[in-house]
Image (cartoon, rainbow, N blue to C red; front, side):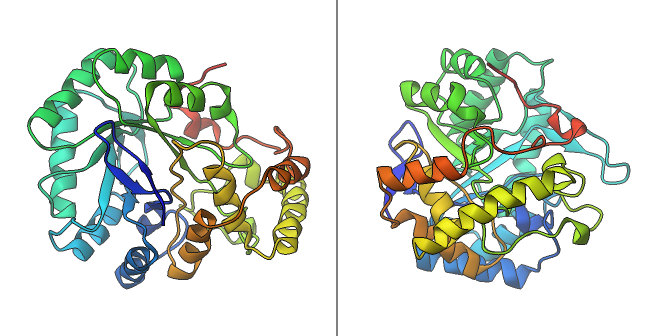
Length: 330
């Protein structure tokens, strides 16, 4: 597994990481044993970069990782996040970037992970009541205290990134980016490259669409993240499925898995990209990791663009309520 730079201090990680949101049950039930099997497979495959958050299963994902690590994080570089709060009883959510709140959430994450230090700490969503300049001072304080190694932001705009880097080093920006979510090409990928910031695409498999198994929205249970998402409701879903079947045919012609091809496409967008496909299973992870070795060519990239031209997908990637907190630009 090749490595790419994650942090401004030169810290390098596997160019394909593992997103651990699904450990928290957002895509269906899972178990600690299954999560541990996937983490073991990650090590065997050369994956040493894990991404989680305090709200993934309301701490469940961090707990599963912590029980696997048993206090030893030497084999993984770990990123987690804070800034979103949720009421488990009402489902109500909001954003909080106040220093006291973030400090308490950081301590809770450290406790669940069984660690004294987190390699990369993201602000999951911006709280517009706190300036990014004040927020950076808070994060730099955590870094000075030895609690975190690097600073990251999720779903921000290029303008916010520039304001943040004027205060101190930002190591990574995480945004949804895949063959059906291309907005980061309108400035974020370029700004990260200019500033030496890693760009971490989450959901590079289109929330399960760019895999060998077609999702069945009718089977999504309450609490399943994709239930009600416009791209997975009709008539959008049927339109999107027709395009993706053509993409799957292309992957078959290339004798590779759709997930492998999607990850390879992400890696080809720039040397500072570190995709973090999410999965609950070791078998699916192996398909994703194979993207690191896929022999991508300009001809294959052009054929992918013909099958899935920019803007082909129907429906928003989030519901109206889920859009709150994502910074827009362009």
